[in-house]
Amino acid sequence: IGTSITNTIVSMGQMGDGAQLERAFAGATVHDLFNLLSVAILFPLEVISHYLYHLTNAMLPDSVGDGEKWEGPIKKIVSPFAGRVLKANKDVIKDIATGKVENCDAYYPVLCLDGIEDYKHCASKCDKDAGEEVGVDCGRVGLITCDKDSGECPGFFQNGASLNDDYISGGVCLVLSLFLLFVCLMALVNVLQRGLAGMSTRIIYKATNVNGLIGIVIGAAITILVQSSSITTSVLTPFVGLGVIQLEQMLPLTLGANIGTT
Image (cartoon, rainbow, N blue to C red; front, side, top):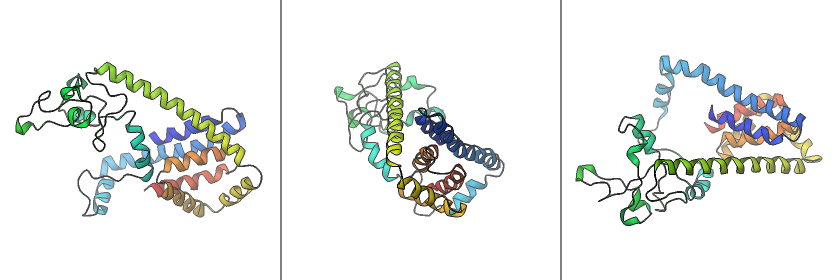
C-alpha cells in the first residue's frame, strides 16, 4: 500500500502539462489499484487460513537464520549517505509494540557517556544480566540513533536531546526530503522530455508495444536489474505521461515488476 503512493507522487511531477498529468496519473492508478486489490483479496485469506505463512515457511532455506535479511545494492549505496543525516532507532517501535515500555519517554533524555557522541558511548546496549546501568556503563538514545557499522552519529543526533527535539529533527528531515523529491521528479520529467524526442520515443514505443506475457517478462527483467519494483514503476509512470508507453501496457509491466521484486 505504501509503495502505491510513490507512483502517484511521481505522476505529480508532470503538473506542468494537463494532458501529460492525466496520462501519468492513469498509469500510476493501474499500479495502485493492482496493489490495493491484491491486499483486499490476499490479506483476508491469510488471516483466515495462514496459507502464506505456511507456504513461505516451506520455501525458507535451512541456511537462513532468524532475523536475517537481504539488502539490495541500491540500499547499500544510499544508506551510508542517509545515515549521516538521520538514522531511526527501530528498537523504539519494537519495544512499545511488545510492551517493554509504555511510551517514548523511557528513552529520554538522550545520554552519551563522557559527552562523546559515537555509537559506543551513546547507543551501545546495557547488559542487565551483568548489572550494567544506563549512564554508568552505557548510554541511551531516543528516536534517533547512531550507526553501528561506522560508529558515527548522524547530523541531527544531539546529546541531551528531548523527545520534542527529535520530533523537530524528524519534521525538518521530512520537509527537506519532500522538497528534494519534488525537485528530482521535476528534473526527471524534464530530462525525459528532452531525451525522448524523435527516434528514441518510437523505439521505446515499439519495444513496449508487445504481447502482455512479454511485457511481464520485460517488467520482471528491469526490476531484477535495479532490485526495486518502486524504481521500475516510478520510471514507467513518466513514460506513460509522455505517451512513450501505452496505458494498456502498464498493467503487464507492473505485474512483471512485482514478480521481479519477489
